[in-house]
Length: 401
Figure 1 (cartoon, rainbow, N blue to C red):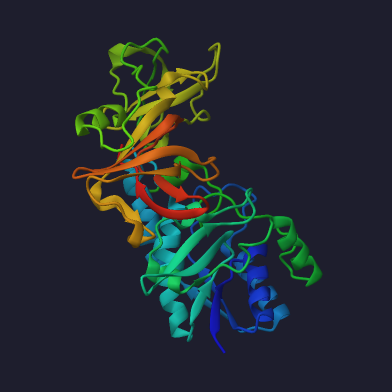
Figure 2: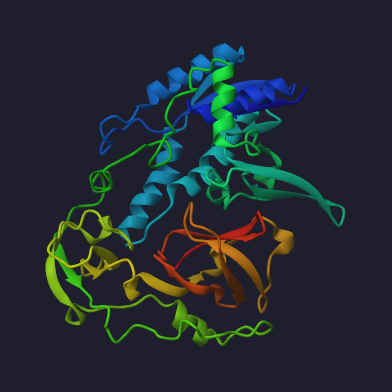
């Protein structure tokens, strides 16, 4: 009998995952991770880790499966939280959930599960896995979850074939209401518990307060840039060859972020630190009296300036392309990796829940460039761009600029 160690989070999804695996005849073991205990910046009403632990243990007792706990807080701080602080300090916006899956759930947690004799680890992610044969080699496909409103494949965009070989996603074929129904039918304690939100294992936080554990507040200017700023590119309809990679200078130009100076706009307020804000952000500016809402269009952490523009359609919010460093290109399917000088059409997303966007990935000696068919809102350094073929996630990369 194959043993599966389930990452029991105290939520309904992992609870139902454990139930389904037991029904399928696996030897199921529950393992709860304690990854974060600091409540600095945590918003009132968010459940601390011990509530999660209690719910996870109640479910394990109901299912009559062994229950264990492991403290991964030191490795979580080092691999996820410290990385977050470092990225925000550079004016970039990391995705801790992607990191948590790559570094914790399918690495540090996997190693702990193997100590318990696991053949597989399982989570409550809404995604699917398939196994295929490619020239005599076993290859694992990572597919979007069947529930379009809950698909979480994006959060797994940095997994490797080795990690996928050990992974099971028991609820990926289900819709969320079905998961709730199963939990209620089995009288699981988590059946009506709210889904967790915010930073993976940390919860909902007041981000500036949370970041001030390591990043100091620094007052600086908020500068408004007009939509008529002459530096905006007007070549967003430029067409590219389907067979040849454009000149790298052209790709660099359209993938470059807009660079502003104080002289390009009007000072309209003050902020408490450019590293606390991110492109596309509306809340937290505390500047009123404008005809349209203000959005962050750029930050300069060295000079501590935040640039804003009025309205959701401000041209400073939109870019046609992005750039990924060569070492940051990651292929879930190495057999489908593009070589230098190659290109391919994919469907892309640059944030969770964003509808897939059509575009072309170009791989050059300098790295990867994604050129979208239409300009994209809020391209943000530090986030992950993921590319799909149909409902299969093929690869991803950290947006460098």
